[in-house]
Image 1 (cartoon, rainbow, N blue to C red):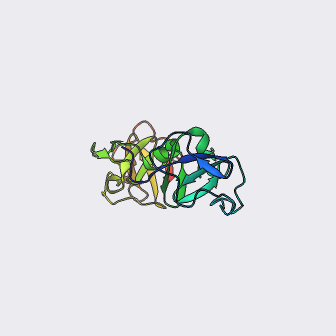
Image 2 (cartoon, rainbow, N blue to C red):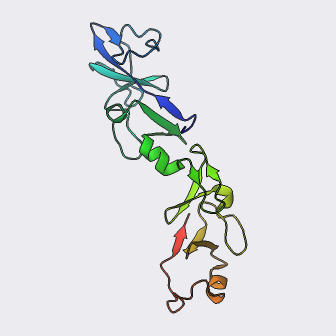
Image 3 (tube, helix red, strand yellow):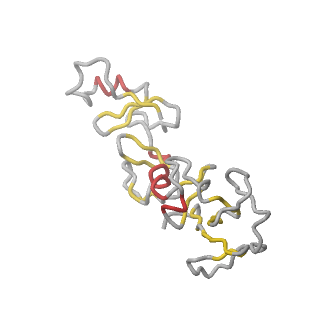
Length: 183
């Protein structure tokens, strides 16, 4: 299960001013769907006169206008659903990439629901509360500078401590390490 941010796409084709759902969905077309002369696209605001249209998030869309906010894929062409979160409309792949799939936190090992916001570093996924400095345990938030060193997170202040305590034994000779990141 991905989340409550999941939205089903209903696709219709237009035939003699009547909308038909070719998938045979149990859901009827939206009220007043018989005449399309007044339908406006939620994406571009233009009149919908196309043979095919989409209905999602209580709005009508040209099939070319309902796109993923990240990859720009036309959502009607790649599936029968989309996802909304933080003001974005997303395909399944980008939703999972941005907000995490049900998996385990790299710090605590607990499950992360797909609907939960996450922090990422070097391919690892963390609960927001678990994205902390390994030394001082202060939480790192978006905008904070941090270092990801040998699988551990360090805040800007504690990086020198990590160097002194031997966390970086193989890297100590290089004073300018390419490990500094910004959330």
